[in-house]
Amino acid sequence: MPARHCRTSRPQEVQDIVPREPEEQAAEKHRSPIASDDGDESSADPVLVEATIRYEEQVEELSRQAYLKMVQKYREEQERKRLKEQEEEERVRLANRRKKCMLESAYEGKVFQMRAILQQELIECEDANQNSALSEACIGGSPEAVKFLIDHGANVNSRGQFGRTPLYRAVFGGHLDVAQVGFLTVLTKSILKILLQHGADPRLYADDGQRPIEIASDVAIHDLLENWDISETDMLLRQINLYHKQEEAQLSRGTQAMLTRLKRNVQQCEKSYQIVQQKVCKAYEVLNQRILEYETAKVNGYENLSLLEQIIHDAELHVESTKVELDKAREKLQQARLDLRDEQRKDKRKNSEDDRPGIVCSLKDLDDILFRDVGNRLGMARKLRISLLGALRYGKPMVVDLMELDSAFENLCRPRFESIKSTLMEDIIQQRIREPFVYVWIAKIIVRRTEIVSDQ
Image (cartoon, rainbow, N blue to C red; front, side, top):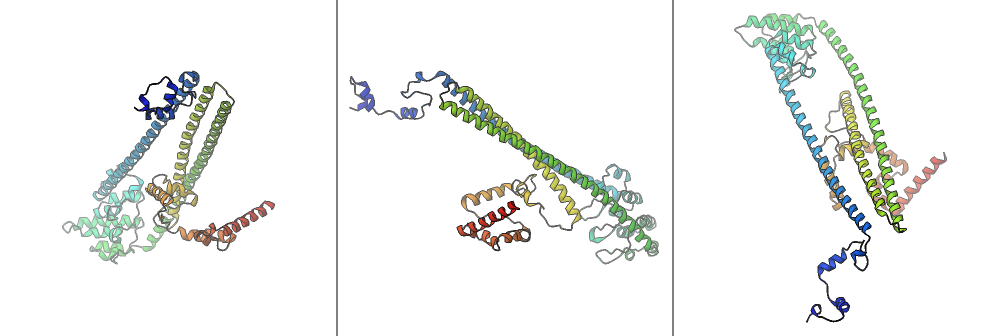
């Protein structure tokens, strides 16, 4: 008969030899620490049991709230990204529609509609063939539209398809209708006068190697171009260049004012971020102090530990709230830096002829641009993080195309490295710096230089 079914007058001894069920073993293994050693739950402190249950409920509620906040934050971020993309698509669609209406109105000579949809960027709008609104107005044959566009700053010497200027297309427009050649000649001559009087250069060649005078089929148009005083064109071009320089200077002053304002905003955001960082550090110090007080009281036999547990719980809530505030301050600082970089990039692109693709940034901004991808400019931050994790965990190769950064690194950083040791760069690249002798030698040099600087 199995031992578990035997009956004896010594129940305690039988209980010692009877094998227990797995459920009983698991229950004893996970028995609450508040129970007594002999397993009698009635001997546990009711106040401590109640405090423990309340603390576990609070921790569970805190975990649930943290999860809900994380989900809500993710949803808000996705919704904000979706709205931003939707606004960008709507803006591009409206801009394209306005440009199309502007080009059609210029061709048809509808000055009233052009005035209604006028915006500064639409004056120099172009179609798929790079023909401007002024060029369309010249080929359309409307002097009012031509005068309207010129008065609002259109470039009279802009080049469109096949390198043809508005003056070239205006002369070419005389070939449109042979049946109304007289009427078209009058209109074309009027448009030519408007263009010439506002600085259109008749000496410019198109891609086919012809000037406007060489394609003029009407005698009146040919005589007008041939008898035009080129010195007047040169004078008008000088005046136009002077006017554009004054506009650029005014725009540059506005750009500098904008950069100054953005830099001031970045400085304010950095100060706010540092203040919040200090608040987080202080909150962690308070939490660690409360935990230390709890451990000390527990060792000293303090009975009312529930009060200390509540204080620790409040300190944890304060830490979480300051961390949320820190995240908001970090996002605000990153957005301010992004606005400043965008404005600086626009200013540099205007003042330089470097049209290479990519984003120009300083080394200290690589974290925000390359890995965090603030502003979603690269659209590949997730790919970079996955590649970096694969390289760290599994030793996979990670290759990042830094374009011309290697030459800049060579010119800027190598002299600094060679000032410490002539082969320091090669030691780092070839991992010889990990050798004890090389590392100790470099460390001694750095310590010696630090002592010299401190003595001075």
